[in-house]
Image 1 (cartoon, rainbow, N blue to C red):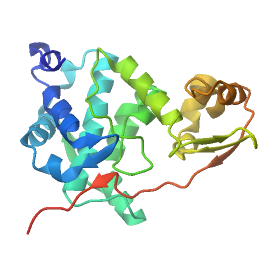
Image 2: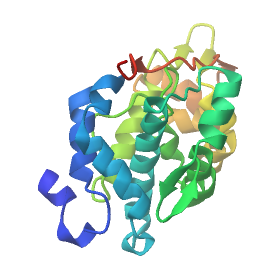
Image 3: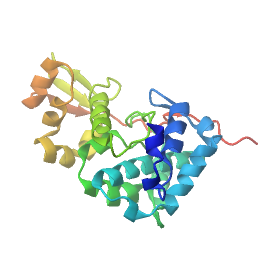
Length: 239
């Protein structure tokens, strides 16, 4: 698999095998070892390549989306390593809107990557793949996203998030669904694809009784508070 990630056809892009290896070494069930990533030269190589990558090498929608998901996740990590944090309201403003990065030959922010580049591609499952270094975000995958496997990877991410009891809970007896705030913030994206948030979730929830209720919009929906604490451990740069 890794030899395919570094094929000559994508030589102008940062090598995904670098990022793939970094994630494999430093992410366990979504929990991130930021100190391990900071010490890993492969991560710096990958991030540096994001800035010099050539947009024309992203010839298909899948190649562009996979690249942008990896870029967002890597830059979100870079922000933490550089001392920024979304754990407070002001911290989120700086982390998402002020901290600038080099991407595809221009300067952008995390919000810019998401709003101006990722969301216009109209793939709702991306909300389960991009991770802003917080506990209530989707769990960071231990692999890079690749164009050839993108659909299967996004499908797996959606299934994992929908069935993650730490992020979504379904009380069938009381018919109350306690859902991640992601479904409130991006309701239009999910409703566009399925008619409603509940109908969207019915595609991915594994329990058949829960899925049936969701398919008929049978739950009262209550959105959970969002935990912006770090999704891992980072002791910071040594003195």
